[in-house]
Amino acid sequence: MVKKYSLLFSLVSGLFFLSLEVNGAHHEENESNYKEGQQAVFEAFGWDFNKAEITTQKITDNVYVLFGLGGNILFSTGKDGVLLVDDQFPQLKNKILRVIRSLDSNMYSRRNRIDYIVNTHWHFDHAEGNNAFGPGGARIVAQENSRHMMKNPKPINLSFIVYPQQPYPSDALPQITFKDQMNLHLNGDRIELYHFGHAHTTGDVAVYLRNSNVIHLGDVFNMSGPPFIDADNGGSIDGIISFCEEVLNVINDETVVVPGHGPISTTQDIQNYIDKLIVVKDRIAVQIAEGKNLQEIQDSDPAKEWREEFGESPFVAALVDRAYAGMIKKFQIQK
Image 1 (spheres, rainbow, N blue to C red):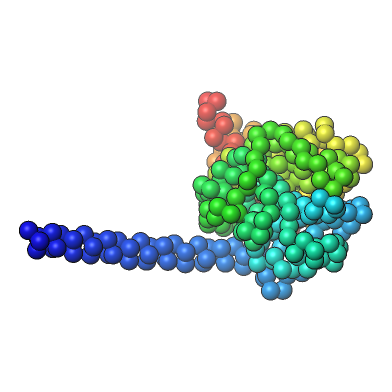
Image 2 (image 1 turned 120 degrees about the vertical axis):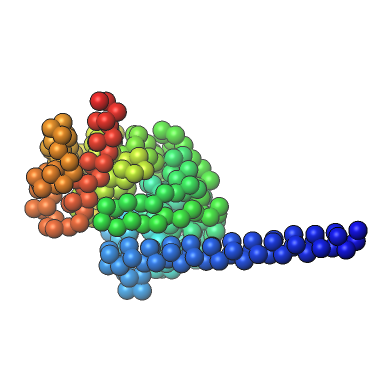
């Protein structure tokens, strides 16, 4: 009987350790594939973290915009601590902190801690800095859909390349979430967070520092090229248009507008952006109704105004591709 159970134990133990080896090998393969996919995207964008520089633009005495690789960062400092709206990449942590220290001498007494972070959405180029600042004690705020996507991500299909988004570790996840709207009161500012529905993603947030009269729109509003619509993960051209229209009802003509990418902008820039997107949407909608496929629609150059402004950027074709992807689903449902 002892021999019987000893043999059984040996077999079970052998299977257990074999399973560990297989799972370990599978994990290493997944990690390798992720890093290769990640690097391919970085190379496609021409991003080199070693050469990256963080530059700043002053908005008020205690509010700045930081430009680097990935999305723009809005930075507020004061008696309540340091607030970042978006945080780019963990590889840029030290460079970001170095710039913040040059603007806020109190960072030394705070042991270089970032106190608060608001994620405008869950995409890698805006929120993966959570991986660096979350473990350091930052309190992270996001719309509830973004937290869900950080825990349960799907690949981000840019149409010309795919980013293999991975789950965020627990200490990089937002601890505070909201559904439609919430307020923070920091550094003498009323900070209003708005979610106006699915737009660029399902969890977009407009962050309005009312007293400073500056708003960060994340990738709902882009000034470096055509917008990217994450259609595979709930984004739509209709949603972006609607979101931007709602934003204009909240801010005023003097509001400083921080786009997800590109230079600081104005409310008129938002209106121009809306108008151009409506033109693209209407052109695509007519051709969908006529039964044309994506290639036929691409050939008609429905985003020609964007192409004329930004040249042969892959994001021009991606705008049409991703707008079509969202619109055809809606058309088929209605049909």
